Image (cartoon, rainbow, N blue to C red):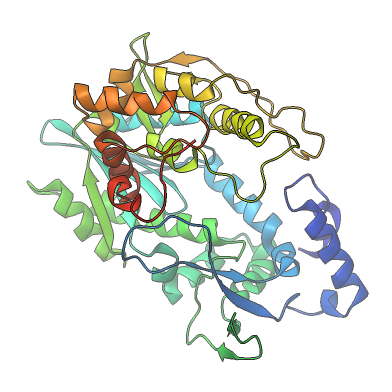
Length: 415
């Protein structure tokens, strides 16, 4: 762990500068020789997040950057191993999809629609899908663990240490120990007022580096339980019962058409060349469209800056996908490719795909009138505010949000 942090703390990464500063800190203090490289955990409210009505706000644990240096490489190796070794069990396949790249998702959707064996289970952290051949047909489900991070028990962390190769036993034990550390909650109105909480058992804090690995392992246990379960007539009920045997409460959504499948916020849609290809859900498009956290990049006319930023948002979300609404939303703006302060760039590669409006909206079961109303969103200009029943249906399905209700308090779906 120490050697990996020394050699890789300055690798290209969005938090590279923070990691370099943290590495300097652990070397200039006595932290590097201690078991834990951080001892001041703080619980913070996650702001600027659109959540389902009535849902509690989410919190994040600020474990500080030195804590992440202890586990980021070990976690990377474990995820790489999970991706490299799909599990073949009881005539089925359990697979970790490590990337949301379209070609990888295309292969995932093909296996969900036609399982390579008795069943197919794909997962990434707390997101998973399951398909099984039963009674002469294929049943497909979107599976979601309720309150995933908070639902893991002590046995999961013991299992995480046991499945880690012996060369990294001590390292993973140190990272798991971070999940037993006390943390504080400070009042934002009265900064001197704070409380300190000590967990009674190991808890998966949101900021710990093994979050994805731990969630993956939880999903593997659910998949093993599914592989051993004897399904009856109600396959959906069987999925929830099998997950309970593994110690988890899950919600199970039946997919009655290919477009109902949702994995990593993508669903299959039929291209104009008549094959299914992953498409980023439209709910993501409506949530990000017209929104900029902080100031708009650049200088000068704010309307032109907003137009260019909007073009960048849409191009970033749909770099290779074309359909009437998204092509209109790109508009005449110029994506911000040449902004000098951009530190990270992604080289775009892959096939260009085209979809009809009908194919894109099939997931949401919109009427012809709703499709026309929703497509009108693409023709809006600067500071226009608009919503309709089609947008409402999209946000409701993808996020449990209501555009029509929400606009009474805050404009939704504006450009």
